Image (cartoon, rainbow, N blue to C red):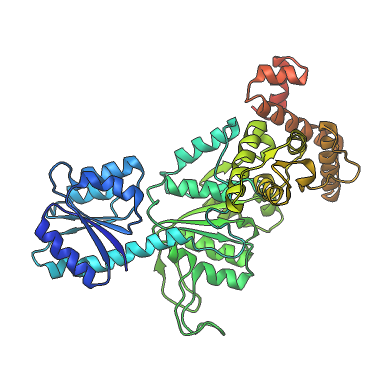
Length: 473
């Protein structure tokens, strides 16, 4: 059953269509004035809109344009008596789900609308429910895409530029930086926003189950497959976006299969022989160095070329500065308090200083965990340092100020470099740590090089020269 809004100023026609739809089990509401519909759609969860084109005050085409401007996303099927291509092209360009030419007989129209309504309802369901596996982030579980820092402003700009393209996008960033949130933002601002967003974590299952989840299987195609056909994630995402999280961990055999799908836009289910056309925009993400993965033979270079049409590099929480940290903490405190049904506790100054000093290896996801736990365990109306569960620094590091944090980072970097057999550690680590220092100070100063140079105890020209030497400009 679909919840349908029928907008048509022909009262007799609309009444007949409403009855016919309700006889099929749908719930249909009628409006004769499209000017009232925008407010209603922004408040009510309709699955599909049936829209007449020629109405006084506002045409169906004008109504579609108004929906797009107000960013109201609902599948709209335009019903028109005008069979010309201009109307069809206009409607589809403005985001209409489909259009039908009104036939002379009502039965013919109802028969034509039936499969379109069913398809629209399925897309809405997939979009709302979010198909996911264990390990995926459920909608509403994570923090919103927040941040006013310069690095995040650059991310927002990239999302805006890339959203309307159909090119594949690769999102790079450390664990917990919000890669799925960015993928959702790309989808939500794209022409595909009324179609499904399907997420898949490539580390969640073993190779065989991952194969089945991505591509589906035919009945009785293997032991335990059962008697029913099973569609894979590509088919569920048809017309929309498929988000492949942690693609750097995908097994080699599936990399080859994925490459064929991206090249041909076709999938073959396990146990099947027929190719199934799919229209899917693929957005991938990983915290791994894919160039290093290629060098070690763990990732295919031709697959990287396919998924890396456009790239977004997400900043770490360390790079985003104290302004973003405070914004996120306040937001997460309010959200955690709302879920627990109590007033948001205040953060003691000592607790805030502990959050400031922490290196946040788990980024925003780690921050989310720390804040949630603090809200649950704190007694009274304030969160103190003892309520914060922060990861301990490496052996030999001190938590007393930036020097202790630097020693912790250095110890970790040395351990990783030695394990990798790297030579010339002095210069390599000196440059790496210097680059991190400059990035961090610039982020704290909102990119102002004069302020950053003053904080670093050097001239602006000296800062610029060092940035050029380290490849930061």
